[in-house]
Structures are given as C-alpha cells and as structure tokens.
Length: 150
Image (tube, rainbow, N blue to C red; front, top):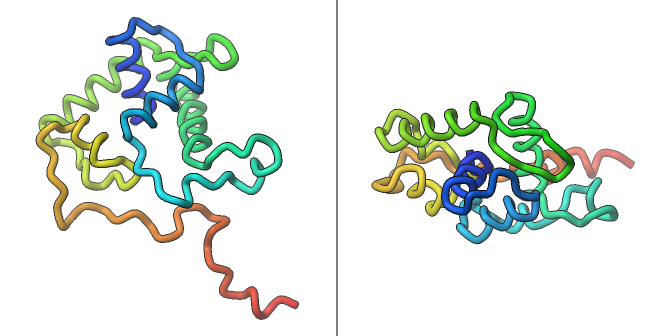
C-alpha cells in the first residue's frame, strides 16, 4: 500500500505518471512512511556484495513486482514505476475504506505512524495494534542449532 500511495500521490500532486525506483523510494523515505528499524537498513545477504541496498528498499521493489503481476503497477519499461487505472482505483478505494475505519490500520506493523495517519487522519495507536515480529527477516532468526552443528 505504501508504494501504491506514493505512486498515486506523485501522480496527483506532481503529475508524474511514471517515476524511477529511486524517486518512489525517496518519496516513501521523505514522508517517513516505512517504520524503518536497524534490521531494515542492512542489505539481504545476496545484496551485500552487489548493491548493498537496504532490505526495506528491496521490500518496496518486491511490492512493485507483486503489483505489476496484479496489474496495479505498469510495466512500461525498466525503472519506470507508474500506476495503472486499476491501481489508481484500488488505492483510492483502499484509502477511503481506511478513512471510514473498515480497514484495520493497527494491523500494519511496517507502516509508520506517519503513514497510518496519512491513510486515516484520525488514527491513534492503541493496545490492539500488531507488534512487529522480533525477527522479520528469515536470515536473522537466531540459529538455535548453531552449537549442535560442527
């Protein structure tokens, strides 16, 4: 949703029908929409030597891929990120449902308070909000068997 909201906002406010990956990620970062923690700043092991890209940015890139498959984000060219008509309709409907209170904003543990209040201006954190898992990324799980393997 963060990606769709960013692409939608850049389309509506800045008349940008497509943006680069860098522009989309910069929009999310500048608005403090992703609840970035220390582990999000580390690259995935496969990215360490290649790009060193922080995990949270890779997650946004995967969201783009998933939304291309769903026909919510266009695939016009490499590094051209834009919403399809279906994507614009979907984010507008979802945003309205959040404002109405039909969508559980508190369940979205990767969304920062900034994004939660963007999606629902009167959002207030509460005791039923979902906590972020201690080990979000698979490769950061503690290896309980490490001392058993020689």
